[in-house]
Image (cartoon, rainbow, N blue to C red):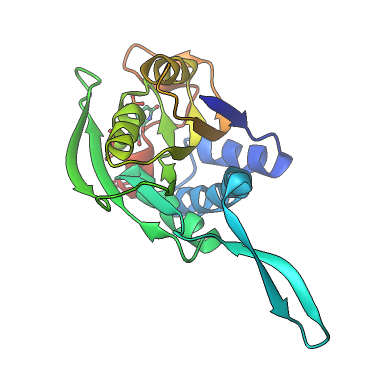
Length: 212
Ligand SMILES: O=P(O)(O)OC[C@H]1O[C@H](OP(=O)(O)OP(=O)(O)O)[C@H](O)[C@@H]1O
Ligand SMILES: O=c1cc[nH]c(=O)[nH]1
Ligand SMILES: [Mg+2]
């Protein structure tokens, strides 16, 4: 997996506030939204475009437009929903598909409880959004769904990633011949004995949508 850790002072600043256990849910949601837009700027560097010519009030100008079919954005529920608006702000014409997945906190295995994706993803560029790449089980299962439907160009955007998750993804898709990109704000130290990212930011879903 090709991994890009976005090195930018504004990303680092927002991520630091996001990590802080004293940051409340409304602020956490706003920061997650702002961060995804910054990460999406890098993640969409390879978005497909086609050449067009428009007429300015003065003369014809050559330019580009997003190629058809437009990209598909897939938030992994629940926590990935906190990154959807930031993505669609940058890609307003993207289609949106949904995957509902939850990690069993005893086994750390990902379980899927909802799937709402287009049947045929051949030729589509897909952007998967989920704040946390921990063991990698959830993201790997999500990308398997996308590959089964024909996707061959998948970029994951995660706020935080653990080295264990990246290693898991590399092993899971080694030799698949289908490139996968990861864009993240930080690569943390490790996972703890409960499968949480250290230092991480805690449970992203609870911090976005849980009762405080
Ligand atoms: O890399 P993994 O070890 O699979 O863990 C990462 C997953 O865990 C979190 O979701 P969670 O299962 O807590 O569901 P939620 O979004 O409903 O909170 C997170 O948003 C990822 O989807
Ligand atoms: O650190 C972690 C790991 C998995 N899921 C989270 O929300 N946080
Ligand atoms: Mg959670």
